[in-house]
Length: 329
Image (tube, rainbow, N blue to C red):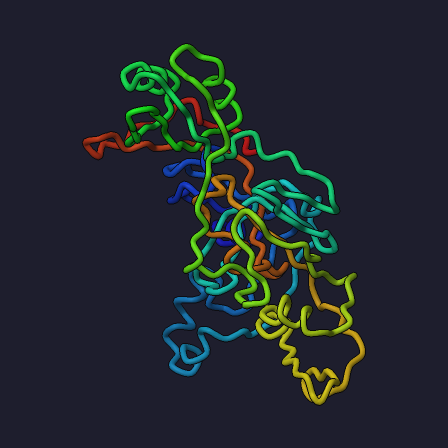
């Protein structure tokens, strides 16, 4: 019964990073439903609890532990993946790692980030309620600023002071920004000025695309309904998924495009792909770094925070009672 629940119905995961703050916090124990999108059936016996122990005792079977035994298949679910869903999935670059992010763009969507704002099909998207953004907060007194942020439960670790100005660059949710705006002791509050790290590569890791975390695109999210007419730009954008997940090696042969040694005029993808972002946009390892998430990597939808443990300064974990059975949205 436990194995069936694990494979077909739900799993429980622990949040270990702040990439989804404040929507999800480190220490949250969340329930992930496999019923929403339909359970993904195991690709090998090593993905089935208890059965994997039996197969690991066989030397020949153990040698194929990291290979795919059966084709990808997913049971029917009662909903489709929607924009804004918080999804648990296998990390595309390492199937043994599990990530959780918010689905921002669906197959066929034209995606773009302009000055940290997300646009889908040229329409500005409202950020998640608890998502964070960097703001520069100018204040006239360190002591009053500390009292204000402490009372609002906004963490402050350090600040900058000059002879003329005092300011702090801090990550705030929209609610926290509204609370700070106009308070006595706060001179002004503006969008933070971030310096792009040009030593870090962003998808698709090519000199032709000088994209950053806050300015990216536009490009189309690939999917089963999308056919591309191969050119240099498309190959750069989609080469990773063509090779890793479509098993289609594409080359340019004297101006003609070949996939697996066959001349092509267009290419249709075999599965859908999704673009994922963390709610804590300035501290999230997401699709901006490593690209698209294929459908066969989707595990399930995050539904509820069952309970949450918050370690204090002494390392003692205390229950966050206000997060018990909280719906994730």
